[in-house]
Image (cartoon, rainbow, N blue to C red; front, side, top):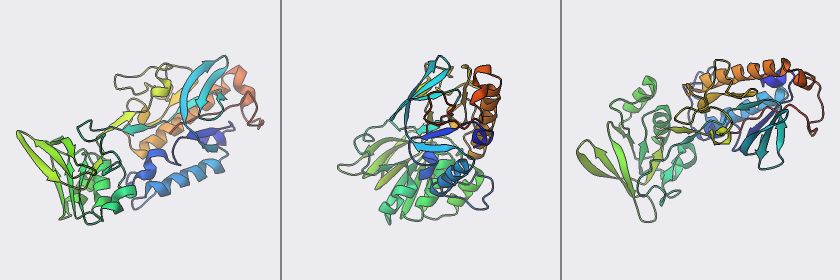
Length: 309
């Protein structure tokens, strides 16, 4: 939005739906401007509308790689490649799998990462939520509206979720939290039937009909792993202006090192990266004529600031 408002021809590439991964979140409580929680499937389209009103073009298209060109970067997409003078990578994160027996075999048959999508399918049935962060506790609260019993299992002695989310779950009689524990297997023939839980030296079996996994995030930085510097976990390393080790490439949000992974902070990252990109273009003599000219978007040399979600 900010790049478009400053006159740069801006293209936003989103692999999934407007808002990316947040579209599947039932309740988001860390977005400024909303007195109550907002659903991700409502917030995503609002963000798209705001960007388009500023002049950006939003396209649902995946990005497979970004490579260096003589004057800028080539973005390999599912459609035609795009030539860009500057790139903002806001690819976010992928949900980390548990990597336990039964998880792969029962994928799509009781294993889910989306309470809003799949919660109603398990009305009146027991479910398990794996994870101790905000996503796990928020989604567990959403599931409590459908499930007969919700069991939240997390590894730490204390959950990492914000206090309000923890208190909300604690007030629900049919929600149980098991701390300092982990799921070691998911059982079932054609569908999830139970999980195996290791709690200290004790191993127990918990019957359930679904397992909702929120066990952490992995940065989706594969498209730039050979282009910019990454930390040991694969996050893109940036400075305070969201500049990466490659001039003209910026990163914002979960995908960058040091992100606190809250939407309010992610929005701040994006605004900073946008200003950084505009400054980069304006101080580059070859790119000055690319700002505010309004050339045909099909032209070979065009400014496209891409974000693959």
